[in-house]
Image 1 (tube, rainbow, N blue to C red):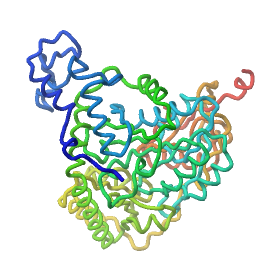
Image 2: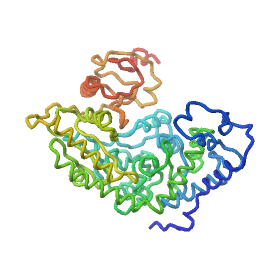
Image 3: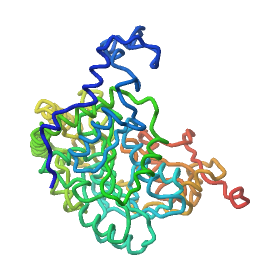
Image 4: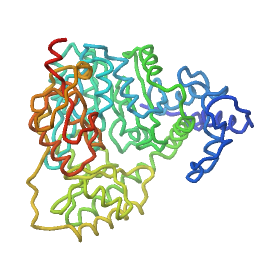
Length: 494
């Protein structure tokens, strides 16, 4: 059980050192070159000039993120204790860097790692950089909303038992949409087979500060996890934390990978925001998260009174493959509207100044966080009422579902495909070609196809549909109706 020393947690060591430095009337001959705001630019039209004064690098007294011994180390230790971890490392390149560090420090080239197919693009990048061999476990699919939910314990056990030579397993908990797995049970079983457990907890920072949410990775006994504190914990964008627990992970491997991937010029603003967010969450997180849950429940109830919308919470996800659910998430399914979720995503912003997390074909996602207010909830509800009046049609039936029932088949290791000879082909001619790139809709950044997978008819139809509706497709090749694949004629000659 996590026991927090509240007196100790009142400290903000990095912020204290930071404040002392910026108030010391320093004469600068170091970087950054604006020398604490001597110059003025159009940036000053957006923010107070004090931002420049507060923008420092790693001067004496501010510690070094690569080898922290002072205020950064103390702030990291406080974060680790707040999350029931043994160690913590501050990240200033988001949980993307955390996922890279976790995989690259635990799995080497040609070693197996078991992971869900609906992972974030950063995880696939980690496979490319490490050279690891992915073994994909398949999540439960909610075909009604086209959401990939969680992997059942039964599926985890089957894939683990069939790959006992795997070095690690990688779990998304929670998913982008808030579904969680039976984390304690999966962790215990993987450990019994001598596998390291890594958790992408990017959307679960708040789990550590509320007893009304699913169990956190550290409390479930996982070896490492990555938290996007900026997503649900109140720090600035890009600021995240890597948590480590137990002795299954080699600290040297973590440190060398961390130092390879982390900038030598970290933003002091991001580091300070992590120190401040941790203290805020310790003392106010539980109450604020409870308020967010109440606002989410209120919104679900009100939205479900509006023709054209079905708001889903915990009950829906438990019926569709989740073990537990993050009640601060609200997934809204569209029903009998002359719009897609993509349309609503844009309309809410352009006409009502409401920014939701993402839109997909049949749903859009709203996050209720420590920063959400009753006014926010009411603005959303009122906007949806207005949209319903304009676009609801009781005669509409949806038949054109595009979700891929099967993910593409893996033929080559991602690293192997990434370095293979390039060939550009029209999307319509890509059937059975091996992809050299990741192609995804962003957000959420879950690839439809990754390097080393074969283009199936499902993938081609899915991509053609997303191009037709002008969805935000992210890929390496910029050709509008072309894709990059492995040139097998040249590859076979290697």
